[in-house]
Every structure is written in C-alpha cells, then in structure tokens.
Length: 320
Ligand code: APR
Image 1 (cartoon, rainbow, N blue to C red):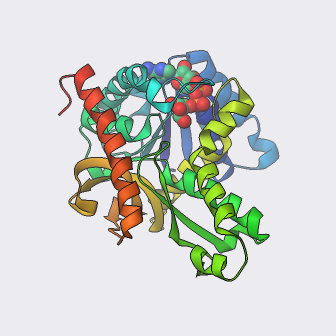
Image 2: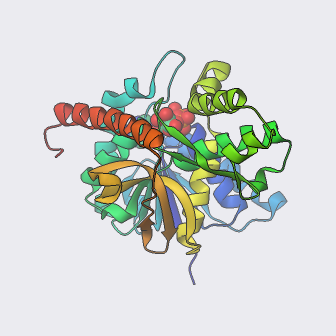
C-alpha cells in the first residue's frame, strides 16, 4: 500500500517542524508548499538528509505549485503571517484571510478528499473561512488550538503537582484567544478533578487561578520571549497528534476548533470543543455539560469568535 501523502501548506517555522515530526514518525510522504519555493525545497531536502541517520523512510519534497499536492490525504495549513510582539492574533485577520482564500482554492482544486487541519491565526475565524473557501465537508476541516492550549495547561499543572504529565488530563474550550476557557472541573490528575485537589491541599485556588491565566497567555508568553515569531514546536506537535489520529483511525478524544451545528447551542460556528478524530475526520463533537460559570466564560469566548467571523464577512462578501 502506498504511503499516505501529507501536504504542509506553509513551510515556515511550524511547517518545517511539522515535516520533521511527520518524517520521524513515518506518518507518510511529505510535501511542503510555500510562496517561498526555496524555503519549501530547502527544508524538504534538509529533512530528507536526516533520514539515513534517523532511519525513517519518507519522501520529502518542496514546491510552490498546488498541482503537486494532488491527492493529499492530510493538509496542514500554516501559511500566513505569524504574530510579532505586541500584535494580537486578531491583528492578523485581514492579512491571513486573503491567504486562506488562495489556500482554500488550492485544496479544493487538488486535494478535495484531504483531512485539513488549520493552524493559521486567528484560528477560529481562519478555519471557518478556510472551510468555505475550500468547499470541503465541515467534518474534514478542523482547527488546531485545543490540543495545544490543553498541553500548555497540562504542562503547568504537572509542574505544580510534581507528577508526570502523562497522568494529567485537561480540557480547554472556546476560542483560541484571550477568552479561552481552561476547564478546571474536567481536568484531572490520575482521574482526580482539580477542585478536589485544591480541597486535598495539593495546591491553592490562587495558584490554580494563576495557572489558568498563564494558559490563556501561553502563546503571548512565547512571543514575548522569542521576539521574532511565535511558538512552533508545541503547535506542530499538537497538529501531528491530530493528523495521526485521522491517518490511523485512532479515534482520539481531542479538543479542536470544530464546526458546531446544534452542539453547544451554536449554529454554524467553529469553536474549541472536545471531539473524536478518526478515519471519517471529526466523527463526533462531544457536547459536554458546563457549569453556570463555565457557560458564561464560554459564551464570552464564542462572542469574541463571532466578532472575528463578522469582520471576515465585511472584508470578503463571498463568505456567508
Ligand atoms: N501561500 C503559501 N505560503 C504562504 C502564503 C501563501 N499565500 N503566505 C505566507 N506564506 C508562508 C510564508 O512564506 C512562511 O514561510 O507561510 C509561512 C509562515 O511561516 P512563519 O512566518 O514561520 O510562521 P509560523 O510560525 O510557521 O506560523 C504560521 O501559524 O500559529 C500560527 O499565528 C501563526 O498564523 C501563524 C501560522
């Protein structure tokens, strides 16, 4: 059986890391596509040359021509502009909306059967626009945010409790922005919910609140440190986790920016929710019960996403 074909649209910091991880995990043959043909080809060749030492069998190539992604099984989209210090994800909206249009049209023409994972920010609005521009079914177009935000939350919790991150589970809901909702009730250490751990004296409510806030600011913290770009190792790892679940039909339960039509009381919006990812794409959106407090925060987050979607519609009247 031929290896799966993975098209990475955008060969910048995240794109290159995605290619390296896909190769190391032998998920399939990788094609990097970028306006900057040299960056795509150069990174592909560099990673291919790591193959003999690492021992992976995966073809690596680079291009700036969408015809070369023909028949891709997975497309991961990072094309666009990344945040600079002082810029919010939303500042990127106008620039990256135009990029989503060209990417969506390229996928529609050459890889209409792919599972598409969008990473470009502002995420919830960009994945919504990408689905429309590509015309692919909503269950085949998803945004990567929740896996990353949850991973950040899990990392901070594991550090606080001095336990393995393997035993920390966490959910972050809502939009991938300052209003995201790290769910304390549904996050656990060895199955014990965080509020119980506060009661047990493992941490204090103040410390937990600070971790929640640090999770919300997780992207900005990295931007502030790097000064010349945004996070790329953890975002790429998160998207690869999603791609692997699709390609291997693992049916992982992963929080993603998924299309909600009825679930969570939403009609036709992409927002961060727990999902099941398998061979059919987003096979299920898990419509969990929220506390009153969580619902208020989630609604606020959804309003922020709706604002971005409205701004997209104003820029491009073809979007509905
Ligand atoms: N088509 C193809 N590639 C494009 C296009 C386009 N229309 N516009 C820009 N690119 C390419 C750039 O040439 C660059 O190589 O997208 C790449 C983006 O890479 P980086 O600037 O290194 O950004 P990165 O850190 O990879 O982040 C990409 O993900 O997390 C989000 O906010 C982040 O939106 C940003 C995206």
